[in-house]
Amino acid sequence: MRRILLASCVALLPGLAFAQSSDKASPPGPGHFGWEANHHHVWSPEQMLMKFYAANTTHDGHLTLAQAKAADFKPVVAHFSQIDTAHHGYVTFYDIQAWRLDELASHLQARANALRAKD
Image 1 (cartoon, helix red, strand yellow):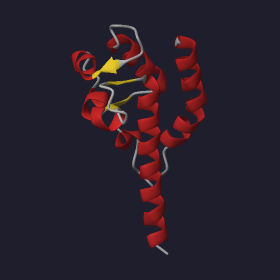
Image 2: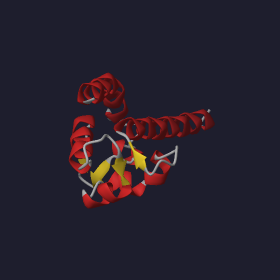
Image 3: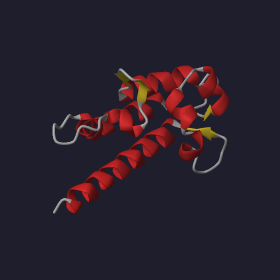
Image 4: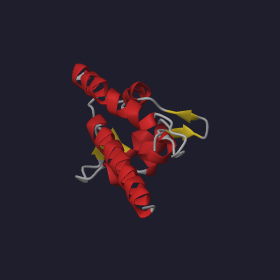
C-alpha cells in the first residue's frame, strides 16, 4: 500500500510543482490551497505523506479526525468535512490529494475568471 501511495505522490509532483511556481503577475501562493503549515512553511507532497503516516497510528490507511487532531495535522483538521466527502469518518491520503486538487482547480478557475474580466 505504501508503494501505491508513494507512486501517487510521484505522479502528482509535476502538477504540484506547476501550482507552486511563482508568477509575479499573480502573487497567490500555495498557502491559498490549504497546505500551509504556518505562515512560513508550505508542505510538500512528501511531507504530507510522511505526516499522514505519522498521524495514522493504526497504520490502516484511514486517518480519523481524532488522529489528525492528535498529530496537529492542521490542514486536514480544518477541512476534514470537505475532504471526507463519503462521510466515512476517516480520510485516506488519496482523499486528501483529491481535495487538494479540487482546491487548486477552484483557485485556478477563479483566477481565470478574474483575467477574463480584465478584457
